[in-house]
Length: 288
Image 1 (tube, rainbow, N blue to C red):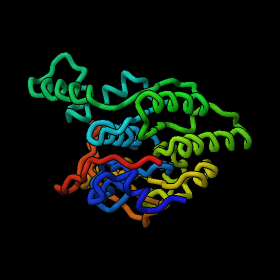
Image 2 (cartoon, helix red, strand yellow; image 1 turned 30 degrees about the horizontal axis):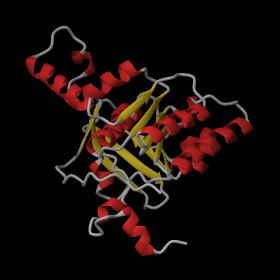
Image 3 (cartoon, rainbow, N blue to C red; image 1 turned 180 degrees about the vertical axis):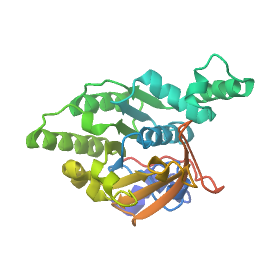
Image 4 (cartoon, rainbow, N blue to C red; image 1 turned 120 degrees about the horizontal axis):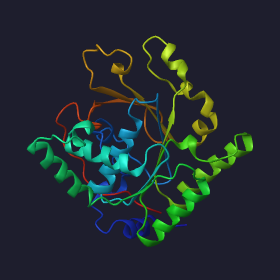
């Protein structure tokens, strides 16, 4: 049993700095300012249809945490190789379309923006593993190694269902247990992605619900938070708000359900705020 005074003094040298009790900010203003954070010991699932922008959202979170909040971040990319993932990060940071960034003809302004983005990326506390075939135990060992040498504040796994496991009930259970063990043992927030069922495309309006994760029932049961990504332009190219992106918090451990709004510029993979909102403070979350 721990006395509250001892706990506060061990975690918070300056008791006035109450923002240190929060988790990591996502970098999405409408989520951050409404109190949703990535908390130690919690697993957050981000789900969408393919090509909706899940990977872009994860890289946005990784950069927000790894640069602006100085959080040691491990990013496991089972979908994209590190070369392409890095290029997309730089493109989003610079606000320069990926196709333009790799073009032989590039403007001086775009070149400067890309160079500045590369320099900023060098400061990121970010580790990337792009193995296509990897087990949850190998992820656990890699995270433990980072934690021993540098400390680990956040784990991100893009395309989590591709983690190697036996395609039966026991294999799925072991996969879920392994994920929860990483989150609990290291006491860090974990963010993963999965895909929504195709049935959502047949529904009027196409707005996703938690039931569109039917094939990942075991995953739905084990995670603490679920964010469903929706962009109307995905289904209606002629929409009046092509950059509007909805992040639907369909399941939350310690937060009411909500729909957060943000802008997503698909040609650069960059997320931005709908309105000029104040920046949240940069302190990272507590551990233990």
